Each structure stands twice: as structure tokens, then as C-alpha cells.
Length: 425
Ligand SMILES: Cc1cc2nc3c(=O)[nH]c(=O)nc-3n(C[C@H](O)[C@H](O)[C@H](O)COP(=O)(O)OP(=O)(O)OC[C@H]3O[C@@H](n4cnc5c(N)ncnc54)[C@H](O)[C@@H]3O)c2cc1C
Image (cartoon, rainbow, N blue to C red; front, side, top):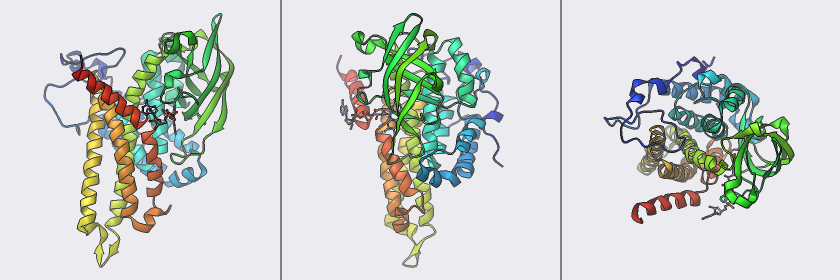
């Protein structure tokens, strides 16, 4: 029987610790960014985790292997997330990882969320993205930008029983997300939403939606405002996409047709939705990087394990030098991507700038996830090409890392712009 993970852990309450009160003088705070881990005087390796984070990794690993593992193939083929898996995420405290205990959450660190996503992705990147979007995008927007009424009303359900979606992209607004056309017209104390959203993860299962809409298109992106709503307030699913990978993760087109929302459903300030989206996607990208390193490690473990069981020419195939050297090169790449990811997470927790590092982590982790999962198929030979092993699925799943939460070109743009700033005044 699987032991519930986070529910049994001591709440972290890190903000009250003396170490945090004596933050390193060089830590830089930006906007509403939280500081949840002190910058340290004595450097330690990026493989240093708190006891709580270590326990979390172990328990998520067991949940992924024992509970999700047996259902992965069936969920991929039916293109549906098993409701028992979603319930398992809630029961194990994985849908409110950073949410405070007062709001029924697990009150753990951002790194804990990254670890959870990584461990889930080793077994099923579809489950990982559900947990990632729900935690690093939806919960975090409400925690950081929602007022007390919004937090009290929405966070407890999101931590215990309701799935959330983050609705920014539209058919005509992808990389150029701030060209969005969904409008929210003021009508007394209400706003009337009209428009459509595209590519919305979790939307097939979700009950809570963060929707970005423009209250004043004449102001361009400065009219973009974030609203929160439940499904029964008027979210319509227009189409479910049939995808190459992460098939058990629902991705839908949504439409909003004269949806009437009270002004109390605005999250943050009117016209500041673009800022919320930029800041939240910066940290969300670290979650996608974690998904990709988990995926790469899952493919690696599976194929290398196989290579030390299969014999050809009277020898284990993993013992051929050319195989071993390929394993070594792949392991180096996974480790490099992991360190980029953990470092970006640490920078975020220390309240220091992390946009460039998050973009680097996401870009590189998605490159190596495609590369390693593709190689892993070859290492297993013919059987790697079949559905008897999870490798072909992981390879299909890996493609998404270069697309969502900013394509690889967009990550390179971000990195290049920040490099330029260092050289041009
Ligand atoms: C499975 C899936 C789940 C998703 N989940 C969500 C979600 O939950 N919420 C949400 O809001 N969105 C979600 N998205 C949307 C996702 O973020 C967008 O698909 C992504 O930002 C790219 O936008 P696009 O598809 O319109 O591609 P486009 O923007 O049309 O890009 C097409 C190509 O043009 C390139 N390109 C575009 N502009 C530039 C530029 N300035 N410089 C260089 N190259 C450029 C891109 O790199 C890409 O190669 C999801 C998408 C998918 C596929």
C-alpha cells in the first residue's frame, strides 16, 4: 500500500526561520517574487536538498512507479487521464505543494515542486504536466497575486479536489501571447468575457480556470487582465486536440460566450495581466525543464537497464564499448540539464534574477530529452521501436518540451536579449 507523501510531512514554514530573516545581503528581490530559501555563505553542491525534499522525492518516486506505472500505456492509448491518478495526486498533497497549510496545502518549497514534476515525468510526462501546470502556474498566480478573499476561496479546493488550468494562448496568439483577442467588457460591477483560448492543458478535467482577457484593447497589452472562474460560470470546451505525445494530458480549445464575472474575480490589478503572465511563465519554465530531465532519465534508465540484460555475440550489449560511451555522453547531458534546472530553481528561491537561467534550463533540457529518448530507442533495438517498452512514448512526449511555455526560439530570444544587456548600455 502506498504511503501518502506530503500530507504526512511537517509543514515547512520556512519564512519564519532565523536563516531567512538573515538573508544574504546580495539577494535581490524583484516585484512580488517570493524569497523562500536563504542565499548561503558557504556554497554547497546542487545535489543538496532538505530532508523534506529528499522524503518527497522518495515518496513521489514510489507513487509514480507503483500507482502510475501500471496505467501509463492504457492512458496513452485511450488519451484519457485515469481519475484515480488525479485523485492520487490530491491525496498525496501534490496539487498544493507550495500552498500554505492554512489553505490545505503541503507548504513545501519550490524545489519540492520541481522534484515532484521530475519524478512523475520519469514514469509519465502527462501526469507530470498536470501537476506542473496546476502548481507552478495556477496555484502560484493565486498565491502571489490574488487578494486574501481570492486565496481563501480558491486555494483550498485547488489543493484538495479541483484541477486548475492556465488560459493564455489563443488561436492567433501563441508566441505573441499578448496579441490575445479575448475581451472582458466592463458592465457595472461585472465583466463580460468573449473569445476563445487554444491549447489549454488540464482543461478536460479542470474546474478552475485562470483566463487572460483584455479589458481595453485600445491600450494593447496594457489592457490584459487575469480573471479566475469556475467551469460552471461559462467555460465551454470547443475541441479536444489529438496529439503526438503527452496524450493523457488533455489539451483543449475553450470558448467564452458572454461569460459574466463579478469584478471580485479579477486576480491582481486591472491591466497587469501581462506582467503576471510574464513572471509566472519565467518560473513555470523551470517546471518544464524538470519534466524534460525526468523524461530523459526515465528513458535512460529503461534502455540502459535493458542493455545489461540482453546478450548478442555472447556478451551483454551494454558491455560493448561503443554502447558504454553513448551511455556516458547521455548521462553527462542529463546531469548538465539537471544542474541548470536545479540552479534556476535555487536562484528563484533566493529571490535573485533567474529569467535567463530558467530559459537556458528549459531550452537545454528539451533538447537533451529529445536526443536521449531517441537514442534510448536505438539502444533497445527492435523492441525499443515497439510499444512493449515505454521508449517510443517518451520520445513522442519529448517533442512538447520545445513548444509549450515558450518555444525553443523564444527561449533563445530571451537568453540573447539578456546577454545583449550585459554588453550594450
Ligand atoms: C500540448 C500543448 C499544451 C499547451 N498548454 C498550454 C496551456 O496550458 N496554456 C496556454 O496558455 N498555452 C498552452 N500551450 C500553448 C503554447 O504555449 C504555444 O503553443 C506556444 O507558445 C507556441 O505558440 P504557437 O503554437 O501559436 O506557435 P507559433 O507562435 O505560431 O510559432 C510557430 C513557430 O514560429 C516560431 N516563432 C514565432 N515567433 C518567433 C520569433 N519572434 N522569433 C523566432 N521564431 C518565432 C516558433 O518558435 C515556432 O517554431 C500549449 C501548447 C501545446 C502544444
